[in-house]
Length: 120
Ligand SMILES: [Zn+2]
Image 1 (cartoon, helix red, strand yellow):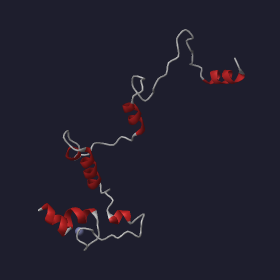
Image 2 (tube, helix red, strand yellow; image 1 turned 30 degrees about the vertical axis):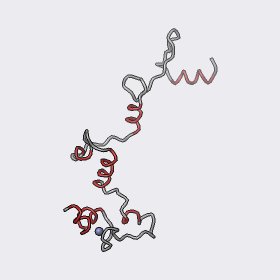
Image 3 (tube, protein in one colour; image 1 turned 30 degrees about the horizontal axis):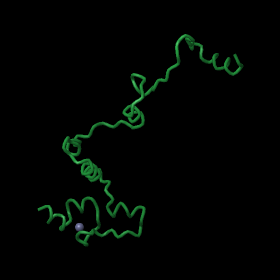
Image 4 (cartoon, helix red, strand yellow; image 1 turned 60 degrees about the horizontal axis):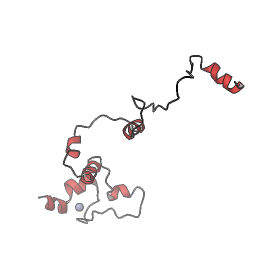
């Protein structure tokens, strides 16, 4: 045994390998030791509690792209011009639908006369 291995061994007093058994690879994030994409994703993501409105966005017959856009809208993360202006000061912030007010989430979904006319 080399000096380095002896040092390692001295730091692991409870380690007593069984030389009659084959080594095997364990995926520690999984409860059964077997790797899966699900267990890898679960080990990477930060868990958050369920939000009460998740069934409005995610339901069995939803169209994933539409659900994702709705989720962004609810979280206020759509690329409206007021948000884009933070990293591109040259962008025009006026609403492209009515050309009267700044394009914000609140304006597009609740205040804009043009989008209101479409909804009604
Ligand atoms: Zn508008």
